[in-house]
Length: 75
Image (cartoon, rainbow, N blue to C red; front, side):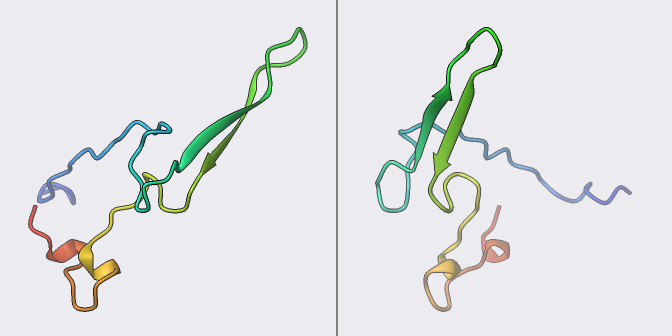
């Protein structure tokens, strides 16, 4: 039996855009074009993301004392 045979994987991938929902309903993502294409250089971008934007799973226990943790939530 393989290590992960007993697990169910769920893809939680979300497209990160300026419209992605955030906890405080502000714009949590933007990209600034630092340098555009020129004959000697590729395009450079500077992405800006608020903490916790699109890369973490949260559970009630993160903000509510005694709330369920991730491993308490049924799949």
